Length: 228
Image (tube, rainbow, N blue to C red; front, side):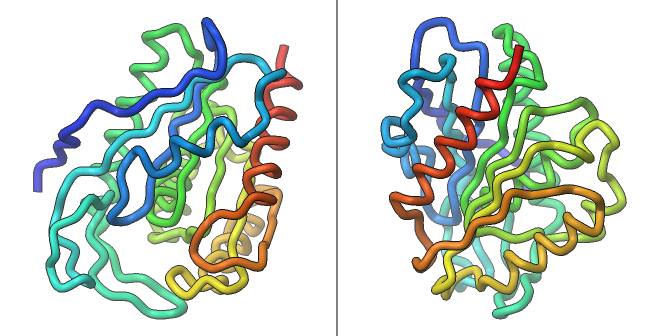
């Protein structure tokens, strides 16, 4: 399938002339507007200006949902509490698109080491792979209620440039869509590879909560505030 996101990403800037960007990928069946309302709740008014970019996944049939066409970063073949069978080709297409978004920000004057990749659920899975295999250093990863869909791809293509990338990972303890076990499996793999994620759990289902949003905001402020 040819990957063709059919809509321009949404953008929100927290101030004039932003020098940081956050590329935030939505979950299965949602679109870029899903997390746009979160930006004002992050408490970034006194932080350096950031540009939030919310792209839309392409429409594609999703096998585990009976072939129903929806926005998806890759096809999910089957679901199980402790695993996922996915289309790696689609995952790699999404990574290529994320790389285009990074390059576009570079062209607007935002260096790669000032770009954060964020994502929820399926979007978080793409953020993990895209950031950890990126050839030059990125600023950080925010991985929410998500998992690593292909450990083999990640291990084989992990780059030294992002082996020490700052990483905020969070999961709901009551998640019945992406089991907490999948999140802790990802955490364990990352720790085995030498990364040191900041790990949070919240008493919530497959969603976000106010405390999580506050914690993400504090993490972003620390990240951008500590830069030169």
